[in-house]
Each structure stands twice: as structure tokens, then as C-alpha cells.
Amino acid sequence: MSTRSDQRHRVLLVETDGRIGGSGRSLQTLIAGLDRARFDLWAICPPDGPIGRRINGLGVECRWPAGHTTHGRWIGSRAAWVWGMRRLIRRLRIDLVHVNDVEGFRLAGLAARLSGVPSVCHVRMARSADDLAWSFGLAGPAAMIFNSRAMAEHMLMLLPPSLKDLRAVIAPNAVDTDRFRSAGSTSSGKAQLGWPTDVAAVTVVGNLMPLKGQDVFIEAARHVSDRFDGPVAFHMVGRDLTADGQFSHQLQRQIGRLGLGGQVHLHGAIDDVVPVYQASDVVACPVRPVSCCPSGDGKRVYQVGFPRCVIETAACGRPIVLADTPGAEEAAVPDETGLFVPPEDPDALARAILALLNDPDRREAMGRAARELAESRFGIKEHGRLIARVYQSVLGASEPLPTEGAGLSQVMAAGMRGGSAR
Image (tube, rainbow, N blue to C red):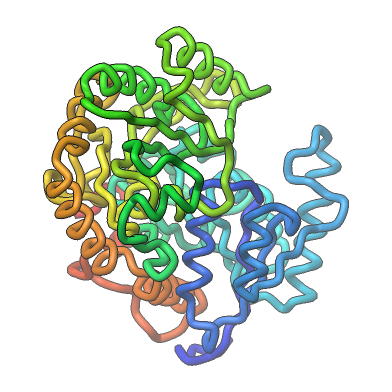
């Protein structure tokens, strides 16, 4: 293989969940930031879902092994998916496979291995040691990309021994600051969505599950409603990840019990969340540090690193109130771009929301500072350049990986048994 850093390479991006979510939106920003003069891109993603449609809109063709699934009941259906992906890799002459999260790596990584092609695993959600052992039991990546320093610190000690010495890089999620931008006044944003322009809007953007803390937000909404001298509405945007919509039903019962039926609104999944941020006076991120898996299997899930909503809010020039969970400080500056509160404390969450609702000048100042932070730290071009350097390193190009001192973008030393990114 040629080692020239300017060689064009063919990269296959894999996203096995085609529904709206932070992982898929993060993949979109990566695609937008990669240099197409250096990389030819294809994607494995359900093409008829919202993420697939967005990827197609970026000029990247989505493929899916026809008639096969990664989640079939029988081993044969999963094996057929692997074999179908292997054929695609060979037919497209792919040089590198980039899998967008740990869960999809077990099959996608195996398909890459069977094709003799190196793979990269992008770690966007915290997993347990058992989950990691399962995902990497059939194949291991040539490199891992962590979306925050906190994620790297959480995950490195849990990796199977066979993966302790591979390349690892921290690449914070990015946001398209051209698309995610302030609409000026919140009134114009509210008018676009049909929300009353004279009613303060407090919003949570995130898929519905206990880890995201929408129930904490509803409890805080009761306190805000009781104390705020003016009309206020509370909006939650996101699809329910729990079986049969159980969490949505729980939230609706909670809303009714607290007498908030006319004030708290569940909007479900929305393809384009930009207008939601633009219409919000305050955005909240009430996540828990740990909770149960929405699948109902009893496993623990962890909030590590910062949710996409934090940097999307910042890019739209809005202040945020966020739970102080591991990694939150990587995306927001306390008292400058957001207010930090203890997790699972609805009264503290309400006090912080009220502090911003009652001080328009402070909201505007924090929104301006947040926008500046998003532009300087979370731009898609820098993110694309960093991922490109990971690709070049894995493919044997002479371009070195980034080194310590490149802001949040750091390389973990080859021997990772010590485990932390500093």
C-alpha cells in the first residue's frame, strides 16, 4: 500500500441505527467536515430512515445489505448481513471501515476483518466491560476514537486486554455552525414553529429514556411554573427508546399528576431540531449519571461526556442549564455559557432555569459566549481534519497523528494501561 499522505482513499462509514439520534447526527457532521478531495465516502446505513436521507443529501450514497439485518433473531440473518457487507467492501474496493459506535462493531468489524480491510471504532456511548468484550470478541479495530476525554477515561480501563495497545484519539463531537445558528430573537423562532411568541419556552432535546432525565425536567417544570411571574411552556423533543413507549406513558402520567397538561409538551422525534433551539429561551440538559438501559434488559447505562444538545444549543446562541455529569465541563463554561446543577435535583434545576428566565440580559450574554465557544472549539472542519489524520495513520500514511497540546484533540499514548487522557 502506498504511504503518500495525499493519496485518495475509499472509506466506508457504518451506522446501523437509521433513526434520529445523537450518534447519527454526529456522523453527519463528520461527513460534512471530511475533505472529499482526499476521501471517497460510502455509508452503510438504512437508506430510508432520516439519518440515511441526510447522508444521501450530503452526497454520500447509503447502502444496506439487501434483505439482511444486524438484529435478526437467528444467527443466520446476522451472518448474512456480515457476508453482504463483505461483498460491498470488496465491490467498492474500500480501504478503511469506520464504524460509528461500539454496538455495531461486532458485525461490521468482523466484515472488515474478513475482507482484509482495517477498521476504526468511534466510541460515542459508554459501555460496560461485558458489552465491550462482546463487541470486540470477533474482531478488533486498528484505532479507537473517543468523543470526549471523560469517555476515554471511562472506557480505557474496561477494554479487553487484546485492545490495550491500539491507537486511541480524543475527537470531540462537532456541530455545523452554519446550520446551527441563532435566529436572532426567540420570538421569530417561536413564530416559525407556531409557538406563542409571548410565552417563555424551556426545552429539552434528547431521546426519551430515564438516563436523559426528562422526568426530572417535568418535576422542575412544576417548580418553575409556580414561581415564574409570567406564562411559560416546557417542550421535550425526541423519540422514545423504551419498549412500547413505556417512558412516554410514564411522563404523560407525571404531567397529569402535577397538573401541567397545558404547559408541558412532548413533540416526539423531529428531523430538524435547529428551529427548536432557536425558539427556546432556555435549554435544559437534565441527564442522570447512570440509569437502566431503555431496552429493559436491566443493564446499566452511563452518561459520560457531553450530549450533542450542549454544543448544538451553544451554536444556536442559547444558554443551557445542564447536570454536572462526567465530561459536561468539556462542552460548557460554568456561569459563562451555561449553568451547572447537581444531577437528579429538580429544585436546583428549576432555580437555575428561573435565574435565566428572569434575566434576559444574562441570557443574551451567555448565548453570545456559547456561540463563540462553539465556533472556536467544535467546528466541523477541524473535526474532519483530525479524523482524516486518524485515517492516514491507520492506512500507513506518513502524516503523524495529532499530539498533546492540540486543545481537546489529543492522542492517547500507545501503551494505554495507565488509562487517562491528560
